[in-house]
Length: 479
Image (cartoon, rainbow, N blue to C red):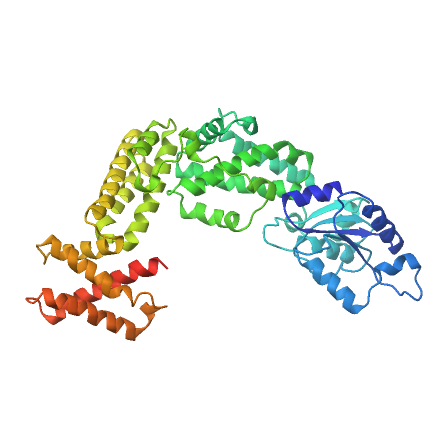
């Protein structure tokens, strides 16, 4: 029970205990129920209450009761977590969430292979099933697998010793990536100390290749860890893996340079948590490293930019500021590409130079700070004009056409456009309804026709279509 409970700490699943007789099944059930913190448990046996001893009766079920029990056992969110069986469920019964099987019954040939197959079904984050052999079925298993090639046997069955060997190899590879970083005592550090430690470790992964290599080997390590838990070797490295997990999360959170290959490998990790106890650990927030209350990063204040420049781990500082800028500019770009597109292109070009290592880290940071300041200025310009973000987007678009010389007139038209759109864009799926879009076109055309008398109808219609596209970008992105 201690073994299975520790398995459950790492990831959810079910267990099956295979015993030699119904007598043993019932006795084992009674013993387990006496253990504090024992998992929810059921005995699955056939029988007849008219003929079998009374002690079997609680475990003999009719068809409806049995179907309900088996349905619950298949469901990872329902009890029981463990069943004790003799012959039932060992063939033809798929339980994908079953990740551990305890065998205390002699089995041979087809029956043995069928039983083992129960625990090896693919399910969510389960890397493989674990067989705990109490009786010594190894020789029978070798005979049962005799007709298969060694390669096929290796795919079907791996000895725990081999798993531990692979675990140690992957651990050595991952830990060597942080040579010179003393992370063994990370749990006893305060927030500032831990921030410096994690940032220093992250800073060592200063190229795409190093990040890809770390992700590849760390995921392999975690899968082996999960498969082998709670083996003593996994317990020994659990805290180290939690530290590596924080570094992995920093790569996801802060790096905009993560390649598509890394993203594909991480998709599994993002959607399915391999280990509850590992994945629960979040990296310390970067602002604790700055040793101040969180600055207002939405406007990238001078205080914040100054603190970024002071971070000793320059690669990390670059990727953090790049991430913040990239996220902010992309949001602004969806609403107002006319104002922010040039900044976005400059940022992309700078990222390419950073990846190619054609500029020193200090130069990259200076250029990022320049972009941040320009971004802040562009945001402030809209406020000085007394325009909302939507009005500013139409203002910039109209200015880009070059047919207005009076800025105040452009402001007036931009405000009028937003006013005209107001009632329409509140209608559900307005952009998918041709009648609504036709009304919007007419309203926008009327606004422009009054002020652009020297331009013909067709040209104004082109502008109206652009304004409508801009409206979709603005108002659909807000939904």
